Structure formats: structure tokens, C-alpha cells
Image (cartoon, rainbow, N blue to C red):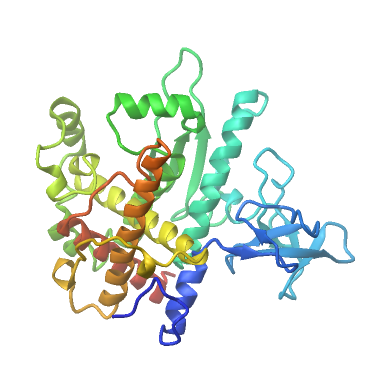
Length: 381
């Protein structure tokens, strides 16, 4: 079985290495200094830095003759920085010098909070950082990412980043027809932790919200009215069941006592749509965190952590050509997060990943893996 965790082996196929590297989050400046996903400046050589969304790289920039334009290391195309680079969003993404003033991530915004409020300035900065991490991962998967505001009014994606008005109704985070609404107060650690406590949730983060809500969007894009719809219904349940009734039942009765034997979270029990969105978010958690670990040289093969590995019988389609790859990723990732959970406890912090996988969840993760792979191989017009 190919070990995803040991990319130094020559027998690991090039395609797999490229996929993992696309999500690895490990970057170096041309001077050799370690740089990071959010950086705009190399502190060692003082080079301006920019993120290339199509390549998934943070690179050093060189100015060219036209004011405000740059070339990136290894690229001939003339680029410009996103118009939000010098805003509170501190966006370090690049875009074509001939195109929009905003990068592919910032173009997704329909509404941002009122920046005349100091708290909103702070919240927006954190929200945008989480959103850029989300969008970079979606691009790495080869998924369609077009702005509903300026590029694809019918099937695109856009964000309303809002804050509740004093005395007014609370802004609810959610998705509707390609519009994702995020309550920016989720960027306030104290408020988010209070909600987490009140809702008895083991995990609540800005990035988690983005990954969950975008899962609803991609269900509409990749599952609804496609060859995946009936298999989805057999695995997750029939989404035609009343959502309003499911919501009412969830808040009145709570999840079933044995939910952990079939679902990745208690919220996933509410309705097939929520099961999909929760599982989708966890698939993104797994790929991003594990590939980041690989990028920084953390090798699951060297960890002294014995866990019972999942085998092909846990998968949705055991004969899938990529079955062994997914199993390798999943099993190695479980070893890594087990160690990271213990490290978090050693520092008096909550678990890094406070969830336990079961076989039905592994089958659902594999289903999502196959849907994404199909979307990458057969892009929609």
C-alpha cells in the first residue's frame, strides 16, 4: 500500500505528490527563508510576497515597468496585487494585471461589514483569512469557483459578511442558492466560545463554518440533478424530507443517543443535507491538515501511535481505483491527529480534532472524495 505520509519514496506516483503539494501550505522564499500562507513580506530578504491562486504558491515578487505591476518567480505573466492588500483584509493574493482589481477570493464578496466600526475591522480581517484558506483548498481540488456577483449570476458563489444590528434580528450563518451568509461576530473568540458552550459543540471555528456552508453550495452544484443524486440518497438519506420538521425535531429532541455510530457529528443527524455538509467539512479538514503536516515533514510512518486502520470494507466503493490512496490518507491522518490531540492536552488546550471516525462516516467521506474527483475530471461547462 502506498504511504501518503512518506513522500520521499521514489515509488510514490507524481500525480499524488502534486495533489498533496497543492494543499501542503509549506512555502519558501527564493532566499530560502520559510514563509507562510498569509505573508506579504519576507522578513529575511524584504521581498514582497504574493499568493498565486492557480498555482497554490506563495512567491517573491519583482516590480515591472508599469506602476503597480509585478512578476512572480517562475511566471512570465504580468500580475497585480489584490485591491484588498492594503485594507484590513490584508489580502496577499495576486490577479492578472489585465483583469479585475480583486483576486478570485475577494471577488466572491457581495457585502462586507461596515468598516467604520473598529470591531468590524478586526472581525473582517479574521473572516477574510479563513475564507482565503477555504478558497485556496477549493481551487486545489479543481472545483468550480466563480463569483455570483460578477462572473456567474446563475451558478456562482458569493458571500454576505454581516453583523447583527443592536436590537435587531441576529444574522444567521447559512447558505441559499449560492449565497453564503456569515455572521462576522463568529470572529470574536469570546462570543464564539460562548455559543459553542451553549450549543454543546465540541468544535466551532470560522474555517469550519466556511467549509460547512460551502458544502451546501457544492451539493447543489455536484449532486443535485446528477448521476450522484440517487447514490447520495441511499447513503445519506432522502433530502426531500421536510427540513423544517427536521430542524424542529433536532432542537426539541436533540440527536439520537447512538448518533456517533453513524454520523461524524450530532448536527449531522438533523437532515441528509446537514449530514453531507458536516461530512464535506470534515473531508476538507482532513485533507488540508494532513497535507500541511506532510509539507512540514511530519511523517505518520515515524509516529509511535498504534490505531486500528480502516480497510476497504469501510469504503463506499471498495473497488474504486483511488481506494488505497484514500485509505492511506485517512489512516495516516488519524495517527497524526491522535498525537496532536495528546499534545494539545499537554498544553491544557481542547483536542485538536475532537471527533471519532466510524465506518459509516468513512463510507461517506469516500463518497465525497469520489464526487470531487469526478468534478475534477469532468468539469461542468
